[in-house]
Amino acid sequence: MTIPGMAKKHQTNKPTPSAELRQQAEARLHQNKLSTQNSALSTVLSSPEEMMRLIHELEVHHVELELQQEELASQKIELEKSLGKYTELYEFAPVGYLTLGRNSNILQANLTATRLLDIDRTLLLGMPFKKIVAAEASQLIDAMLEHLFTKREPGSCEVKLQASDHTVRFFRLEAAVSDTEYACRIILSDITAQKVAEECLRKAERKFRSITEQIEEVVVVTDDKGVISTVSLVAETMFGLSREEVVGHSFIDFMADDDIPAALEVLHDTLLCKKAKQVVEFKLKRKNGSLFDAALHLQYYQDADEIGCICLIWDITEQKKN
Image (cartoon, rainbow, N blue to C red; front, side):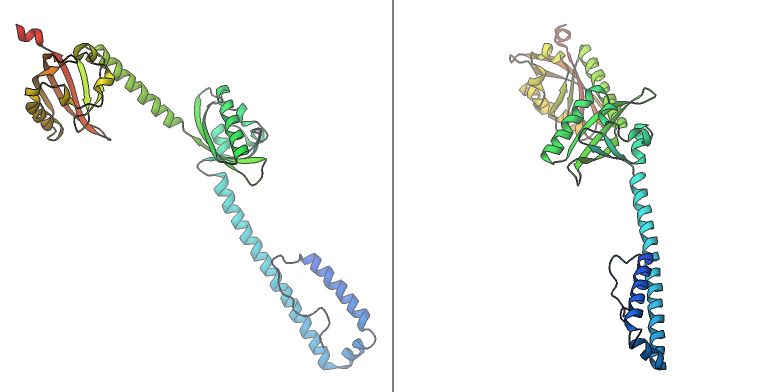
């Protein structure tokens, strides 16, 4: 005879807490005693076999509870490990993670974000993000959030921030919709080094352009096929051509017809044979079709991205007359 309620139960995905399980067991045991105190109880007590069966059932049930408790303890340990793992991935990611509300209020922030923004998390939470950045960037953030929440599409923008030590830093924000309509997820990346490098490159380009525009010689830069990519403004005086009329054309287009074979050989030696330096004289064509004598100083160059030729051109017409 098996006492009702003592049969083995199927485990569920959400085990009943041990305290609640004990209360349910005591309640059922009390009910069983009431229902069996007349005939069933006397039968159990009067039969040694039934008594042994009852003891066995109780022992099995006890072991089942122990196994269930061990399983719950094991699951708790695994959950704690997983939580620790994902917490570490979130908090110490190489980029900042933010959760923003519709009004740019910061709802959540990982430790990397607090480090990048140089603001304690207790102060950061609840603060409007657009109040942290430079004034001109506030409109960019408003536009990005408006697009994201209205269109439910990802967005991005670049903003400038002045740190507490008065240094200027640049950040890229990449926004994605969240599971709710009231918040969005933000990836915060520090792009200060990239912006500094870009500005250094712009300064170098401006400096190079300024130098080439202030010297008397025409400076021409070609690619590896002899197509002109850069020319100084002096070309307008020497050739009667604007920069737009020169860039994109082959260097040979401005040679006198009789000098083209020799000019092709010089370009071949410079570009393909990588001849370091050549000084030659050719007749060149102006915009009106007239020819003039010119001295050309050609120099092969190579950088990480391309190879080509740098050429300085002098008008030596007067020297030839003498």
